[in-house]
Image (cartoon, rainbow, N blue to C red; front, side, top):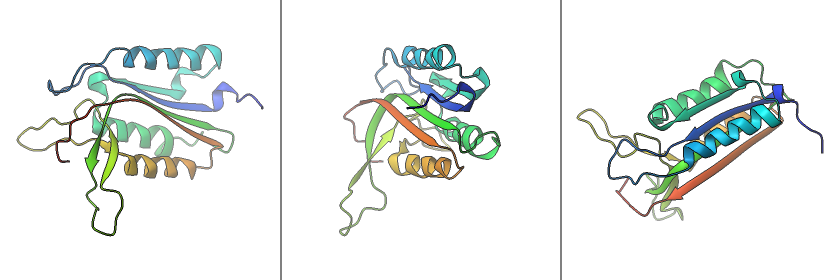
Length: 166
């Protein structure tokens, strides 16, 4: 197996211990795991810091995770090519949500979601939902179409058993 040069590795690393919604239990170690992965990538593999975006706690909102994915891997990154490896890493809460497209012909009544920092938070103008597996699949498929060699997705998720009906 050939070693991938560090300058060809691109990563979006997310670690969330504390959530905006006080009803969601605080986690321990997600931010530390994210820091450890970044240290490994930069120290052991020689990945330049500018190839890594790390979001922690309040930085890791739903909007910012999706925006960072698109900007770092898809839109503004002409340096990603057929020699590149893309890594998406998430450490935090996950849950399941009702499949909005479920009907009698569909077997998938629920979908798994990752929970961004602002998950479950409601203000007078909006309610924040998780990022479902279908959205992750679409984003990762778009990343794959950039022509990169490898797309890697690692989810270090603590599943909590609340079904809020989303």
